[in-house]
Amino acid sequence: EAARVVLDGADGRLPSVGEPTAGAGRPGEAVGHEGHDDQLTRSLEAFDDEAAQELLDRLFAQFSVETVLEDVILPSLRSLGQGWAEGSVSVAQEHFVSQLIRSRLATLARGWGRGVGPRAVLATAPHERHDMALTIFGICLHRWGWRIRYLGADTPADELTALVAARPPDLVVVTVTAPQSRVDPAPFVELAQRAPLALAGSQAAAELAGVIGARLLQGSPVSAAREVATTWQTGGRDQ
Image (cartoon, rainbow, N blue to C red; front, side):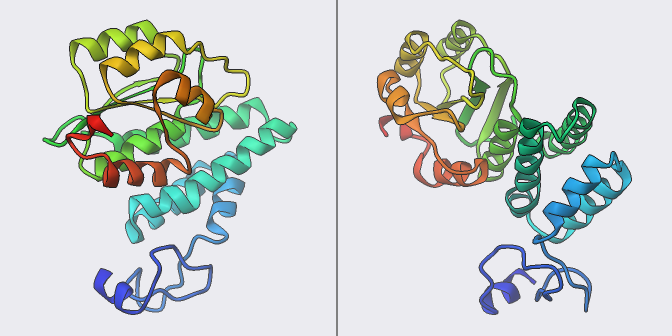
């Protein structure tokens, strides 16, 4: 089925609603993502757990994990985040969305520390609470063969440095996404001297990365994971 999609000239993205897909889904069934991210958003805003889970079940059964994360879940999270910023999404809705999406991501992340590939340590900057994008990055990087050690939100820089010093990984990724984040570069300079360090997230800037001596990862969590997996080899500490 995958070969048929390639031979038919598909570009790897989900087609629009109503557009038939060769080699995906049941015969005659139309599937796609254009509209499904909106559908997911509406289900989440309406506290409709059953509809949201059913949609995700169907999409994960028909398409790759990376495709569903990139084309459905991330757009939906961005839409809901914008609603939160504008005041149209309530605290209760935000908590409901976080719980449901985190539960799905946790299932996808199971076993991501096992394997024989290079190891990445993932954490957010101190005082950073939002880590779902970092989780998505880790899921995709693991699917590219890496092992993940996940520290998550609000990780103190000194504790991260101590962990890296004790067990140096092939890569450390720190995300900065909250507009109010003010990252003190000093502790991360030492961290970058102990292991290859990359910064990611909407508030990560080239200037900050340059001061620290870190690599800057741009784009979505999915594309950033693909970039690391294809350019940062096991011996990538010289990059």
